Image 1 (cartoon, one colour):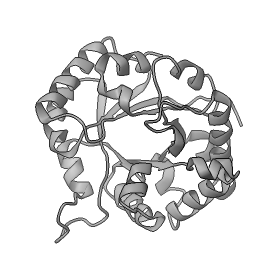
Image 2 (cartoon, helix red, strand yellow):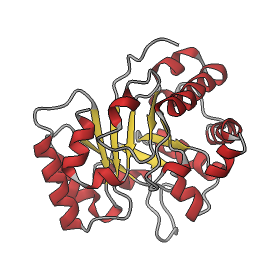
Image 3 (cartoon, one colour):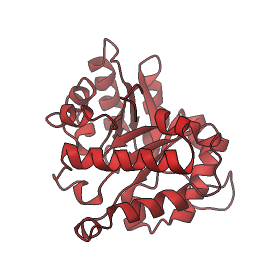
Image 4 (cartoon, one colour):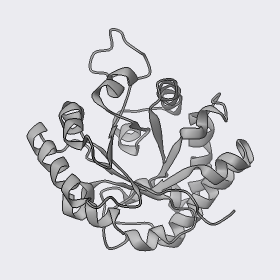
Length: 253
């Protein structure tokens, strides 16, 4: 596989943190810290209530906005859910799909994730598909079989043409919020596997162009080493993205 020529993405997942005023303040601070504009693509995913007001803060800046989840139907009696059109109207251009916390706590299945991906593609939202193994799976040498299933079922029935905007995020479950981070070599090994999977199952063109992010306790002190790996095209940042100064340091790795 050729050396990376893809524009990196640094994405911040704010999870269930920050009230609307707190989110607006953090977004404003981040916009100020990212002047002049960095050479990477930047995205933040605030909680749902803060999406529209945060977007007003981000307008005219280099920071794009994403959502943390979405439902696959356009509208209907689905209490508590949000559609792709709602997210687009709030100013989102990205959406996280299949985050490990959604899989773990809310029993999201690969089939549901597949439906969400389809809905995102149909409505011009760029999906970031999250995949990753548990600590038990890694200890039992099942990392690649877990990822193979998540990819196979998650992308089932989706055409190579529709997948052109897909972003992948490898997030080892054992490294999320634990302070543990996969070594640079461990992360590169999995990213290379995912790129090779795309090449074999979908095609060389997408394998070369698709951006694969690493997520799992990314911090200012480990981003540089991760980004030195040829198949790592950015990061999905959790806790460190909540502090604008910390996130800005990661963006300017």
